[in-house]
Amino acid sequence: MTYDNLSQRRRAQYTNESVLSATPAQLVTMLYDRLLLDLHRAEAAQTTNDWDAARDQLLHAQAIVGELSSTLRIDAWDGGEGLLAIYNYASTSLITANVHRDVQATRDCIRILEPLRRAWHDAASTMTATAPVASGGALGVA
Image (cartoon, rainbow, N blue to C red; front, side):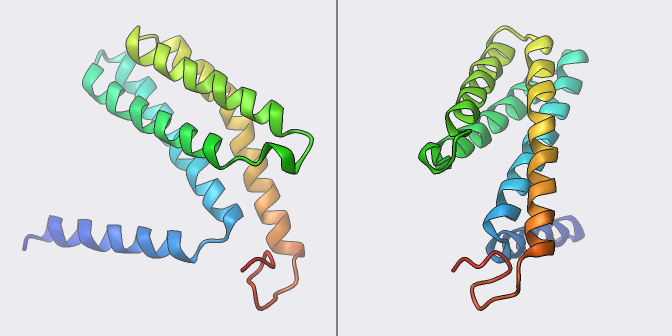
């Protein structure tokens, strides 16, 4: 086994362990972090006309938006419908960015999703800082 393969296996194991031990709020922030990373990579690839790389990043971003949409409980809070509308808009924009090679559509997604990423990080850190440590974890969930 080469050093690169070993390094990749260790990185994958670390990522897997991080996901398995994460709270629900941490999982959402991890998804948002990767989503914005994909979008910035896609934008960079689009600006250099590397359409294969842009496509791969945009498809992964679409999968993340799909996951966020499918796990959203719109009935759990008043803003659920609005957040779902944002996810639907982002999904449509990502398809447009990919099919039409439209860097502005990618930038629009970054513009609307970056504040949500920051808000989720702020909420997760507030929840962790104020939640008592319970047998169900920092968020009190099993």
